[in-house]
Image 1 (cartoon, rainbow, N blue to C red):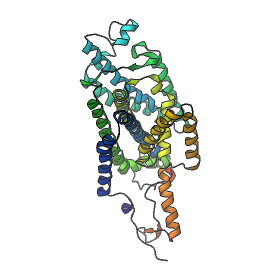
Image 2 (image 1 turned 30 degrees about the horizontal axis):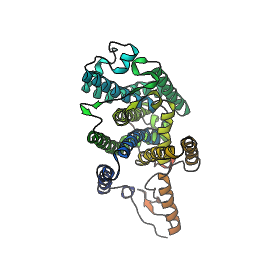
Image 3 (image 1 turned 90 degrees about the horizontal axis):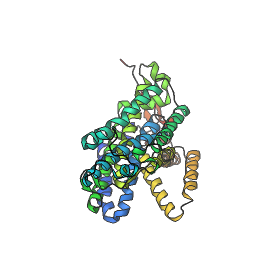
Image 4 (image 1 turned 60 degrees about the vertical axis):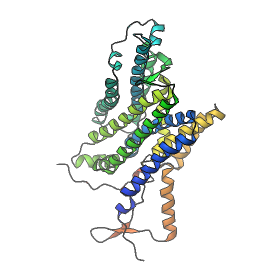
Length: 393
């Protein structure tokens, strides 16, 4: 039976299709959502988009890099607390006080030294963009250079999240277990004004589109191929002259950057940040959305995070005590029966349709032989094509 030559480049979305996809997403986020949702529901969607930003980074680090990041709550919390500290200082200055209201109640009459730099909005933004990835680089170098991976890295990152939450609980200067809340303004804009609340939604929506675009570029680049190669054949990559630790650190730092930005936007949208939002449970919740959506794909983690967060809100309103069990059951079912997530079901269906329609398409190699073409999206991490690499020079 004759076969058809189908280059892999033709199975990937082209520039026009990609641009159309981003245009549709922009219309939905900037046009449809504000028109059909109430201010309360639009605020909830903004909260979900923050989770989606975190999920995009986890998809890069875990889905492409194989790093089971159970401690993203640390970087999410760092960005959130730095933004919250700036907002509380700004609110105090609006009232003519020198310290935030909760410090006055606790008897603290002077700003702690580490609070002082966050009085500046520029320093705050710079810290949000620099501190989380910097900590991720330092931690990653210490871990990956020693070839710690797999379950050991997952346990270490989870322990880091637990330690961070305990540290925050014991600090009166960060609100203790109550956290920081009751923010009045966001860089001079009144947070009680519905117009400004919508502005926050538009900002986080634009950040999400930029994050997805940056993640797509990384995945399709030479670095993305190396990241997949390190996940599947780390020793072979090392023998070819590349340093797998450096490749992993970059992905880990990018994921930390995304989480820090998401945490910073979470604070003005939700209006509160506490240790309960940055510990082990939130870190696992981030991971569940990525796993359900499909960790090896671009949009799977984003849509999975939004879907899980929406389901949590909807079920919690009707069945407050049942969501935890439903979330655990959903995670078990997906991991046990659909390890590639819901995004992998589409690729599996295409494979079955090809099998029913006849012989699958093949592509010709340089030697003249033919082999089956790869699917458009990878239903399983192990199905990623092995990148052709040259030794590092």
